[in-house]
Image (cartoon, rainbow, N blue to C red; front, side):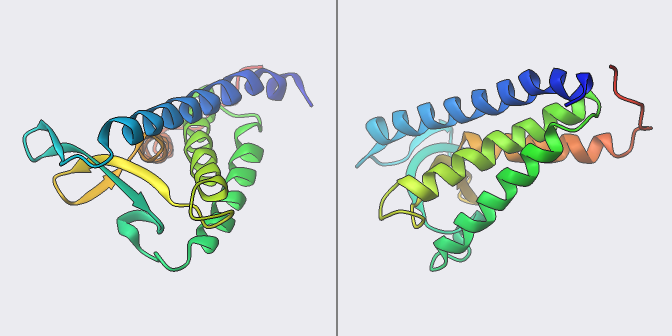
Length: 161
Protein backbone atom coordinates (compact mmCIF):
# COMPACT_ATOMS: atom_id res chain seq x y z
CA UNK A 1 0.00 0.00 0.00
CA UNK A 2 1.53 3.32 -1.02
CA UNK A 3 1.41 6.39 1.22
CA UNK A 4 -1.39 8.04 -0.77
CA UNK A 5 -3.60 4.98 -0.32
CA UNK A 6 -2.72 4.65 3.37
CA UNK A 7 -3.78 8.27 3.87
CA UNK A 8 -7.15 7.57 2.24
CA UNK A 9 -8.00 4.70 4.60
CA UNK A 10 -8.95 6.89 7.61
CA UNK A 11 -10.90 9.32 5.40
CA UNK A 12 -12.84 6.67 3.50
CA UNK A 13 -13.46 4.37 6.44
CA UNK A 14 -14.28 7.27 8.76
CA UNK A 15 -16.95 8.66 6.45
CA UNK A 16 -18.35 5.20 5.62
CA UNK A 17 -18.58 4.19 9.29
CA UNK A 18 -20.18 7.54 10.18
CA UNK A 19 -22.86 7.05 7.50
CA UNK A 20 -23.44 3.47 8.64
CA UNK A 21 -23.78 4.41 12.33
CA UNK A 22 -25.99 7.42 11.62
CA UNK A 23 -28.24 5.39 9.34
CA UNK A 24 -28.60 2.50 11.78
CA UNK A 25 -29.21 4.87 14.71
CA UNK A 26 -31.94 6.73 12.84
CA UNK A 27 -33.54 3.43 11.79
CA UNK A 28 -33.53 2.30 15.42
CA UNK A 29 -35.15 5.60 16.38
CA UNK A 30 -37.72 5.30 13.58
CA UNK A 31 -38.71 1.80 14.63
CA UNK A 32 -39.11 2.84 18.26
CA UNK A 33 -40.86 6.16 17.63
CA UNK A 34 -42.91 5.58 14.47
CA UNK A 35 -44.22 2.01 14.77
CA UNK A 36 -48.01 2.03 14.60
CA UNK A 37 -48.23 5.79 14.12
CA UNK A 38 -49.75 7.85 11.38
CA UNK A 39 -47.30 9.88 9.26
CA UNK A 40 -45.80 12.82 11.16
CA UNK A 41 -45.61 16.01 9.09
CA UNK A 42 -42.23 17.75 9.15
CA UNK A 43 -42.86 20.20 6.28
CA UNK A 44 -46.57 19.65 5.76
CA UNK A 45 -47.22 16.79 3.36
CA UNK A 46 -44.03 17.59 1.44
CA UNK A 47 -41.80 15.90 4.03
CA UNK A 48 -43.16 13.43 6.57
CA UNK A 49 -41.88 10.70 8.85
CA UNK A 50 -43.54 7.37 8.07
CA UNK A 51 -42.18 3.91 8.88
CA UNK A 52 -42.03 1.37 6.04
CA UNK A 53 -40.14 -1.86 5.50
CA UNK A 54 -38.90 -2.05 1.92
CA UNK A 55 -38.22 -5.52 0.48
CA UNK A 56 -37.24 -4.07 -2.92
CA UNK A 57 -35.05 -1.36 -4.35
CA UNK A 58 -35.97 2.28 -4.92
CA UNK A 59 -39.73 2.77 -5.19
CA UNK A 60 -40.10 -0.86 -3.94
CA UNK A 61 -39.11 -2.15 -7.38
CA UNK A 62 -38.38 -5.88 -7.32
CA UNK A 63 -40.03 -6.54 -3.96
CA UNK A 64 -40.06 -10.28 -4.67
CA UNK A 65 -36.33 -10.42 -5.41
CA UNK A 66 -34.79 -9.26 -2.14
CA UNK A 67 -31.96 -11.80 -2.42
CA UNK A 68 -30.88 -10.18 -5.72
CA UNK A 69 -30.51 -6.81 -3.98
CA UNK A 70 -28.44 -8.51 -1.27
CA UNK A 71 -26.00 -9.75 -3.92
CA UNK A 72 -25.94 -6.38 -5.69
CA UNK A 73 -25.29 -4.58 -2.39
CA UNK A 74 -22.44 -6.98 -1.54
CA UNK A 75 -20.81 -6.43 -4.94
CA UNK A 76 -21.27 -2.66 -4.59
CA UNK A 77 -19.61 -2.67 -1.16
CA UNK A 78 -16.58 -4.55 -2.49
CA UNK A 79 -16.20 -2.32 -5.55
CA UNK A 80 -16.75 0.94 -3.65
CA UNK A 81 -14.23 -0.05 -0.98
CA UNK A 82 -11.67 -1.06 -3.58
CA UNK A 83 -12.10 2.05 -5.70
CA UNK A 84 -12.49 4.37 -2.70
CA UNK A 85 -9.09 3.38 -1.33
CA UNK A 86 -7.24 3.93 -4.60
CA UNK A 87 -5.18 7.10 -5.02
CA UNK A 88 -7.44 10.01 -5.99
CA UNK A 89 -8.57 13.40 -4.79
CA UNK A 90 -9.98 13.70 -1.29
CA UNK A 91 -13.35 14.86 -2.63
CA UNK A 92 -13.67 11.86 -4.93
CA UNK A 93 -12.66 9.56 -2.06
CA UNK A 94 -15.26 11.25 0.20
CA UNK A 95 -18.00 10.79 -2.43
CA UNK A 96 -17.15 7.11 -2.76
CA UNK A 97 -17.03 6.79 1.03
CA UNK A 98 -20.57 8.19 1.36
CA UNK A 99 -21.74 5.63 -1.18
CA UNK A 100 -19.78 2.88 0.58
CA UNK A 101 -21.43 3.71 3.91
CA UNK A 102 -24.90 3.72 2.34
CA UNK A 103 -24.35 0.46 0.46
CA UNK A 104 -22.89 -1.23 3.54
CA UNK A 105 -25.78 -0.32 5.80
CA UNK A 106 -28.27 -1.48 3.16
CA UNK A 107 -26.35 -4.75 2.90
CA UNK A 108 -26.54 -5.19 6.66
CA UNK A 109 -30.30 -4.61 6.54
CA UNK A 110 -30.64 -7.22 3.80
CA UNK A 111 -28.53 -9.72 5.70
CA UNK A 112 -29.80 -9.34 9.25
CA UNK A 113 -33.29 -7.82 9.34
CA UNK A 114 -36.52 -9.79 9.16
CA UNK A 115 -37.88 -11.76 7.44
CA UNK A 116 -34.55 -13.62 7.27
CA UNK A 117 -30.92 -13.83 6.24
CA UNK A 118 -30.24 -12.28 2.81
CA UNK A 119 -33.96 -11.45 2.51
CA UNK A 120 -34.18 -8.61 5.03
CA UNK A 121 -36.22 -5.51 4.43
CA UNK A 122 -34.66 -2.04 4.53
CA UNK A 123 -36.14 0.35 7.09
CA UNK A 124 -37.39 3.52 5.37
CA UNK A 125 -38.97 6.45 7.18
CA UNK A 126 -38.43 9.76 5.35
CA UNK A 127 -41.44 10.30 3.08
CA UNK A 128 -40.81 12.77 0.27
CA UNK A 129 -44.28 14.03 -0.66
CA UNK A 130 -45.49 10.49 -1.37
CA UNK A 131 -42.99 10.13 -4.25
CA UNK A 132 -40.77 7.74 -2.30
CA UNK A 133 -39.78 6.87 1.25
CA UNK A 134 -36.10 6.62 2.12
CA UNK A 135 -33.53 6.78 4.89
CA UNK A 136 -30.15 8.31 5.75
CA UNK A 137 -28.27 5.71 3.69
CA UNK A 138 -30.27 6.75 0.62
CA UNK A 139 -29.35 10.38 1.23
CA UNK A 140 -25.65 9.44 1.47
CA UNK A 141 -25.85 7.33 -1.70
CA UNK A 142 -27.52 10.12 -3.69
CA UNK A 143 -25.21 12.85 -2.35
CA UNK A 144 -22.13 10.71 -3.09
CA UNK A 145 -23.35 9.99 -6.62
CA UNK A 146 -24.16 13.66 -7.29
CA UNK A 147 -20.73 14.68 -6.01
CA UNK A 148 -19.06 12.12 -8.30
CA UNK A 149 -21.01 13.47 -11.28
CA UNK A 150 -20.06 17.06 -10.42
CA UNK A 151 -16.42 16.06 -9.99
CA UNK A 152 -16.45 14.43 -13.42
CA UNK A 153 -16.81 17.93 -14.91
CA UNK A 154 -13.67 19.22 -13.18
CA UNK A 155 -10.17 18.70 -14.51
CA UNK A 156 -8.51 15.74 -12.86
CA UNK A 157 -5.49 16.49 -10.73
CA UNK A 158 -3.00 14.10 -9.34
CA UNK A 159 -3.88 13.23 -5.74
CA UNK A 160 -1.80 14.88 -3.07
CA UNK A 161 0.73 12.50 -1.64
